[in-house]
Image (cartoon, rainbow, N blue to C red; front, side, top):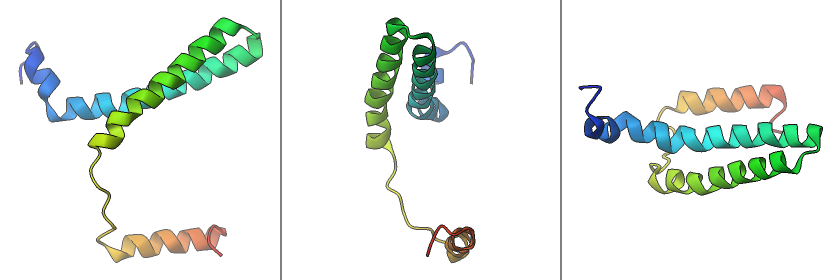
Length: 94
């Protein structure tokens, strides 16, 4: 793939994953950081930035849910058994 071909770069299979999955996560993390900064500095502008970051993360998470594949149960029972045994050993399941 030519790195200067914009159409090929935007339509590549990995491009949608990066944008749809990681962009809302980055907005959420930035919103939380701005919220902590707003609490510490007592500045309303930082609180507004945090609010709009979190709002953008919530709105941009909708296409992620819509385009996500349907979750199927685990096909290997060993994965389910090991996960449940580790949870029960840690006290997670009673």
